[in-house]
Image (cartoon, rainbow, N blue to C red; front, side):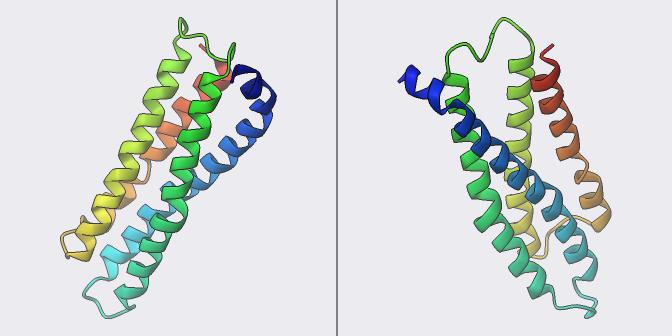
Amino acid sequence: MTDFLSLAYPWIKSLHVMAVISWMAGLFYLPRLFVYHAERAGTGDEPVQSFEIMEEKLLRMIMNPAMIVSWGAGLALVLTPGIVDWTMIWPWSKALGVIGMTWFHMWLAGQRKALLQGKGLSGRSYRMMNELPTLFMAVIVLSVIVKF
C-alpha cells in the first residue's frame, strides 16, 4: 500500500489541489449568492427562485463533491510515508483550518435551508461571513508552505 501511495503521490496531490480550488470557489461564491438572495427577497426586483436554483446546484453538484474529494485525497496524502511530521505544528494547524472550512461548508448548507424557509440572515451578515474562508485558506496555505 505504501509503495502505491508513494508512486501515486503526485497524482493524488494534483487531484487534491484541483478539488480544493473547486471547493474554495464554492465557499467564496455561495455566501455572495446568499447576499443577493437575502437582499432581494420580498422586493420583487428579481425572482428569488433563480437564487434558490443556483444555490442548490452549487452546493450539491460542485461544493459537496469537491469537499469529499478534497478530504479523500488529503487523507491519502497524509497516509503517504514521510510526508507529514506530526511533531511539528503545521499539520495540526492545517487540520484545524480544514475542519473550520468543513464547518463553514455545513453552516452554509444550513443557511441555504434557512433562506428557503424565509429565516435567513441579512445580506450584511452574509457579507461578513464571506470573509471566513479567506482566514481558513490563509491558515492552511501558510501551514503547508511555511511548515512552521
